[in-house]
Each structure stands twice: as structure tokens, then as C-alpha cells.
Image (cartoon, rainbow, N blue to C red):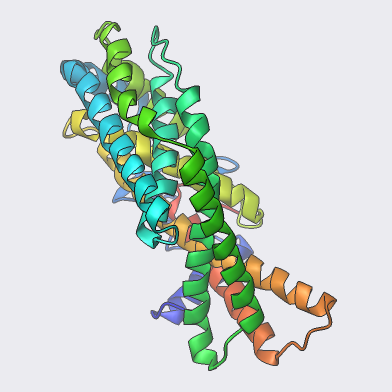
Length: 344
């Protein structure tokens, strides 16, 4: 568990869970929420991500950003070339070392980035590029990499939580080892059957289709999509379940990836840079919560299986579960504080 001010963290946690207003999250005098140094009026109901500028401001920046249109096509092509190259390299490395942690992470993240890329380019009128054939190949790899990566992260985290207890949850480690073994075997099989050589051609083919699209207002169209998508994301209640918050995490990752794609063509003083920083921080906070929550759910399920099989269950197993639950709740509270508007 991370060290820090336990009193402060407990205060944050109790305030969020109880639904009471916190002076850490809101200014008492004006009821404005302090986000990235700016005051943002709270949203009714769920917390909606603030676009940071009023509609007139967004239109102003879009108008100024029209000079960047000619650079958008280059940015899209370069991003796609970089990500497909990295994905193919990770795939080739896993064919030789199916348990390579860095390659597993690169493969899993690479597929997510490609999906976010095509979600963005789907909004270019007249672009009739069919990418489903390419993504279908890598979706299976993403699923396999997901199992492998989760098992790797949970093994590492579980070991760290066990040290203060001077104890090892052997049954849980056996299950995680089995997951990694199965994922490694599937990776080897998939590497032999799925050839990603066609991905190398993807950037060139995409560029040919993109070159046929008029450049006028291309940047404006994509930024409008970013505004509409980003501004429409809402944070659920802290009482919501794992699925709802995980859904928010995926949306924030998608927003971060898409803003990163256009990072080099954004006007230097536009609100999109604040959106990028906000999405990055949100992704980090939600990622920390997700890791804790996943480990808690795994240990909880493992304990249930052990009880069902009438296996001896040490007292420290329940102590571990209690620690993980508290850590998950505290990290969720920190996630809630990051979003504009009270979440109750």
C-alpha cells in the first residue's frame, strides 16, 4: 500500500462515500470546483467532464486552428505508422518469448491505440477506408495479451501486499501461474497462425485513401468530434460498481489516445492541451484504482473457491482481503475528486 498522509486519505474517503461536500473538492463560498487551477461550475446529476472553455471560446480556437489543417494528414499517417510498427515488433518478440512483460504490454496497448485511431478517423467525411480486416486479426491477440498482462500485474501486486503480512497466499499464486501458462501457450499458437505482415501495408493504404479527402475543415471536424466525445463523458457515483467505473476508464483512455494523435497539430494555447493533461491524469488515477479493484475481486473469488473446496484458509487471507478492499475504495475516492462536479 502506498505511503502518505493516511489522515488526509481517510478524510477524502469518508467525505466522498458519505456524499458530503468537501472543501478539498469545492470552494465553500461560491461552490465552484477547482480543476487544474480553474473554477468550473458543478454539473447536475453525474459529473460531466468540463470542456474548460465556453462554446464561443471553442469556436474561436477552431477558427485559429484552421491553419493546421495541412498538418493533420501527416500527423495521422505518422501515428499509424509508429503504432503498427511497434505492434508488429511486439508480436514478433512474443513469438520467441511469449512471457515477455514489455512485449505483452506493448501488444495490448497497441491494439487499443489502433482502435482509438480508427474511432477518430471514422469521423472524416468521405473516407471510405475499410480497416475491419486488419483489426479482426489483432483483437484475438489483445484478448490473449490481456489475460497474460493481468496475471503478471496481479502476481507482482499480490507479492507486494503479502510482504507486510509475512505470508504468501499460495493457492492464489498457483491460479495466477496457471493463467500465465495458458496465455503463453495461446500466444505461441496465435503467433504461428496469425501473421501481421499485412499491418506493415496499413499506413500506406490509409494514406492513399486520406490523400483523396479535401483538406478544408479536416482539423475542425476532428476537434469537434473530440469536444463532443470528451464533453459527453460522465463519471458514475462512487456507489456504482466495478463495471461502470471500468467503462469510464476505457472512455478516458480513448480520449487520451485521440488527443495524443492530434497533439502536434493543436493550437499551442488551446483548451485541448488542458483536456489532454486532464485525460492523462484521469487515466493514471483510474488505472491505479482498476489494478486494486481487479486484485481485490480476484482474491475474493479465490477465497470463495477455497471455501467451496474445503481448503484450509488462513486468517491472513481475510486480512489481505480487507486491506485490498480499503485500498480500492480509497483510490476510487481519489478518482472521484479528479472530476468536475460532486459525485454522490
